[in-house]
Amino acid sequence: MEQGCFTALITPFNKAGELDRQGLEQLIDFQIQNGITGILATGTTGESPTFKWKEHDHVIALVAKQTKGNCRCIAGTGSNNTEEAITGAGNAAKEGVDAILMMDPYYNGPSSLEIRREYYEVVAKQYPDMDIIPYIIPGRTGAQMLPQDLAILAENCTNISSVKEATGNLDNMKLTRKHCGNNFNILSGDDSLVYDMMINPEINACGSFSVMANIVPKFMTQMVTLLNQGKPDEALKINNSLKPLLDLVVVTTQEETKNHGPVSCRARNPLPLKTMMQLLGMPSGPCRKPLGKMTEKGFKTVLEALKQVQADTPDIFKPIADFFDVDIDERLNNTKYHTTLWYNY
Image 1 (cartoon, rainbow, N blue to C red):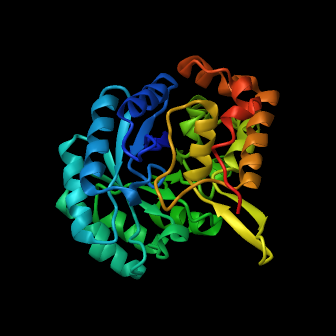
Image 2 (cartoon, rainbow, N blue to C red):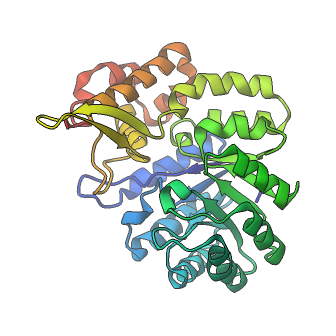
């Protein structure tokens, strides 16, 4: 794996919840034209938990074909079933992807040792010519391969030399660098932490799997490139311009129920992102159930952040306006584009 910025691509759906193939092609072209290092297909952001495996393989095939010769292609093929992960990896390999991304097994709760021995090592040895990237995100999976086991894994399997780190725990990242060594690639899985992870010498991340690169691929890529070139001051300017967006991967609001008092409501990725993309006039469509819509408060949080970025740094959304032929100000200020994107508690 090389350093750089990789977009965790959404999967656009039509109103019936089926794949919008034309929209997918447009989104891939948009990424390529804006200089992205690579595209991750069928990750969590792409709503892979809702896919049948036939759909899963179909989307990977489409992305692999269109990215060939233009940018790198990574396929999300993880599972909580090792046999299923082997099959998914094999199908991705047939499509000629550059690497596969596998999250730690979710829900069934294996130990770090089991995750290494019975999952990653099994798949890595089955496909020794395929680069495999572990994806550490305990907040989603309820399990975690620890840095020590990641280091052993990398020693045992030459096709594992990178990790997508989404623990949100800087101490865990420092341990990963300590145990895995200087030649191991740490890529951020949290948009809001990319800058901090890359400038911290005890972590020394070299890139990012980015959610917000769906809408700002040019600037996320520029920021990562500048940091890898040792230009933190220039990168910080971009980070500061993007910050209102980078904090929106998850949006939490306090809502008032009709008869039962206040509750906390958390809109998780990709719901805020797809809400933004629909608002901005990009191919997206709704999320698949059980994801639904944001609350009105959540939507207003997203809308105000978009308006702030547009007012402070209008160049940020210019690539969207040019590529998709949309008027950003019109879409942010005309309520006809807003009313179907949220519902009340």
